[in-house]
Image (cartoon, rainbow, N blue to C red; front, side):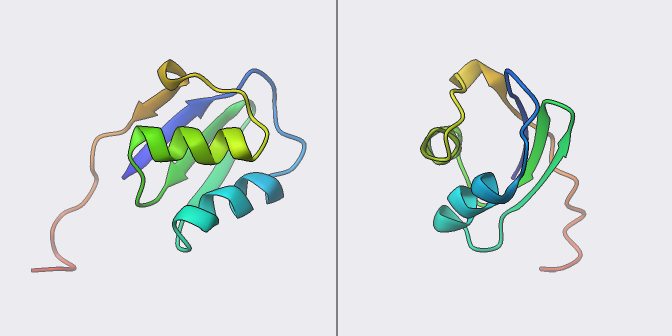
Length: 77
């Protein structure tokens, strides 16, 4: 699934966030656009929220938005 997450401030580095996310999903991807993260991985909102909080980012569940799927179904038939 893909998500956007609004942080209260722009992260200085993505390293800690990447480590926290990859502890849950080793294939997780994250990118930042200012104080907004775009995250792709095998998360639901509670697991993503927990990973971000463990990485030191005080986000609320309403800061996390699930994005519509862009999957065309071609990879898995």
